[in-house]
Length: 478
Image (tube, rainbow, N blue to C red; front, top):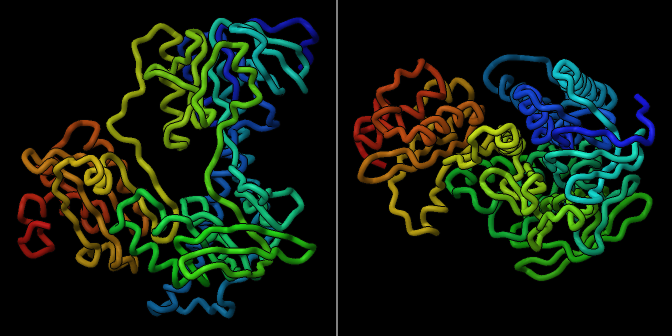
């Protein structure tokens, strides 16, 4: 659609079409606002859909299927597998993941059209508190009454170690492209991105070495949830090196030579590829925020209040660009709050908990107050754990090393937090989230009838254990 040089006028400008942006735009349109959505991407969905959450989970599913096939052989199901690990046909894998992304992106575009939202492809920067200038677009500018900034974030690089599109040093985007399967891969960073993508490459046959600067994987998560994952990854990866950093990297046409430093000193090593996954930085530096009167913190995150309003009262910000936990579902919730506020409704983003899931094998999921946070804050809590070795469903899944835990107020039994590690842990966090948000107590979870045999029972039995009478454990509080 060619719009020429005349400025577009709109009630609400949404800058960015990732989860936070499209959720805000859809909600605002549903509330009757005239909405214009601007993004440089050809397809909707942002990093999460196009180069992040969705393609990575598709690849992790393939990795899990391969692991389950190997387990099935051990359980007595002869699948006739001759390759260990299974051979990944990269072209077919890429075609499949691309098809998943395309279907979801096309669905978002259709929903956008059905809601009457105007979409403009281009890059925008503010020329004032109520005007956006566009480049690489069919129109020159947009005048708006309100705006929501949802431009997301991008992978952070290390000094002197810059990923390049055609190079052997990759960021998460390059790793998801699956250009090849390196024989030896170095993963820099033990957060969820490094663990997930490292697991994919290891499942596909790469010899993976992972380094992490902290003294454990997933720093900040509870240790009892990470221990089973660490044990599994030690078997899957060639090496896990904690308290280790990369000092330098030099690549040639075939390899990357790196210098590593750790507790035992420095050493040189050679890998076929290196993936850097050390965090993300907000996409706020090229938006002309000064012209709009929008303030940022020292890290470049846009400052917002609970209504997602910035220092410019007519401009809001949601998702990674405004900091927070950098989770897609958090951005979506924030976007809906901003849209409601702009539409004149009373709304604020003030959840008691935001769930997090790491889609490794085993998965790790948690929400609310963690045991680690309680210790750091001096909050008195009681922890009730239910080991999955006592779960019939976990044993049928070959997941006996799993664990479900509740963080509870010692006097009232109120559910303050939750954690789980094991296959399908992602399915347990929703019930726990509801319990935290509603201020439920242990008795509420214990009295709720859970289907048997399911992993969901472990929530009820964790609550029962707090009360002193877990059905499938000896009567001892834990």
